Length: 204
Image (cartoon, rainbow, N blue to C red; front, side, top):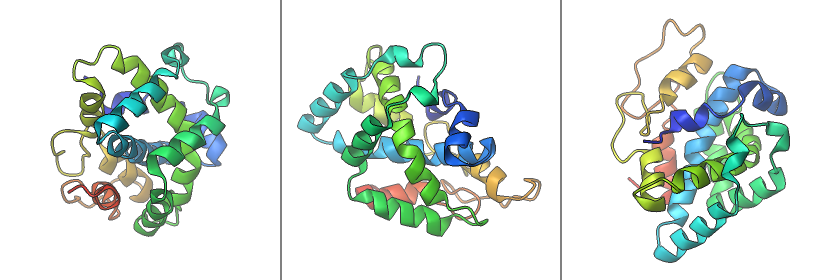
């Protein structure tokens, strides 16, 4: 079953970091925050039959073979990516950026990094969904639900098998040896991504 770790592992972090002007560790933390944010927006769009049909149609326009042999960030169509982000997040973009920036300690403007990364990552996500949709038995809704986690994660672990707490803890927790234990669904440093996304898209 697809999960966010599988999607995150497709991202060439050195290339993404070069585009963002950060190191690979910060790029991983950025991608680990941006991917669930984008998927939550797509899931929100697919909340009606009409929305799901429209999203499925858009996904089919993206080539699953783009992922074969490894993703080349330089080959990503960021103009297409920006359209995907605008359609999926819309007016929630500014709120997401502000809340991520306010919640992330350590002098890292996570909101700005995520905003910059989203158009780069969006076409990769669509190609990934195109590849998985062809074999998903639960349809688009089941695929997105599985990626975002149909069940609650363990403490510090986001649904979908992505240990966002560990990833962000490594970035914000200094040397990583003295990390506070986060509350369920909350990453070290006080970043409650689940709460932020739930507030934006009206989900608890």
